Amino acid sequence: MTKNWKNFTEEDFDKLEESEHQLSLDELSIMLIFLRDSKEDILAEIIKFYKKYGTNDIVTYNDARKYVSTKDRRRRIAVLLDSIEELLENAVDASEIRFRNLVKELIKTEQDTFDIKSTKEHETEIQWGQDDKHWYERLWDDKELWFLYLTNDLKQGFIRQRKLDDVLKQVNKRFDYMENVLERLVGTETNAICSVMRQEIFKKLGIEKYQYYTQADEITCETCGPMNGLIFPISAYEIGVTAPPIHPNCRCYTVPLMD
Ligand SMILES: [Zn+2]
Image (cartoon, rainbow, N blue to C red; front, side):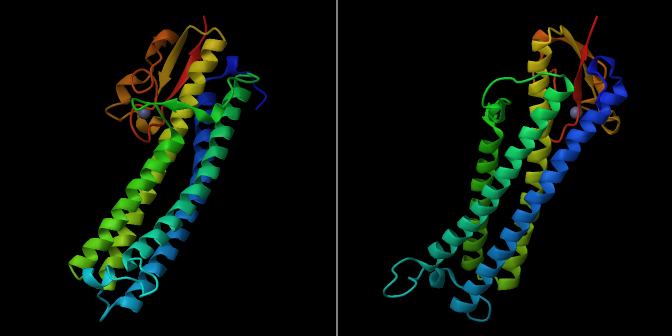
């Protein structure tokens, strides 16, 4: 990869996108291991809770709200939820480190490709999108939401007197959903970070126009397909409008145009 970016063909940019995508898949696979480990631990906590306080694999809402003991005046369910939150938090904490690593690698790839030495400080603090959030704010917002879902699932399980098996099934389903959300988050943030970097780098290099490219498998995408090949001035570079990501999991990219 000593080829100068000025001689890059469409295929070279395609390969670059592919290698950045691969980076994200590598880190994602580790994050998914953290999430699955945390799921196993959470399921074990729930089983323990049902075995301890339940009758015939059912814990009533009333039982769940009783105090742990006459000495420990915390409600049983509060103790369970605390440990679940901690387990989930540990997984997200560990994922955050991998995410940060991914962002660093992506920025380095972009800078190396365009032979740019360094950009602004706090490079991993890239904000983008209509909510103007950092990737880690989105990650922690998701964690908050996931925890709320689990909380509601458990409470509803007690109130409706669901059997342990059904409760575990529901928790498993939630984790499938969380995995999808994490996958989408990593994919979309990867694309956004590269897109933000290109805008910065193109400006720095004095490039005036850029071209929008769609991945071969996205050409048929209703949203991105019509964008393929469009040329814009750098001043019009706007993520979600004239620059990727246009939608979650978007894998489109921009290339510099030289006169
Ligand atoms: Zn796209």
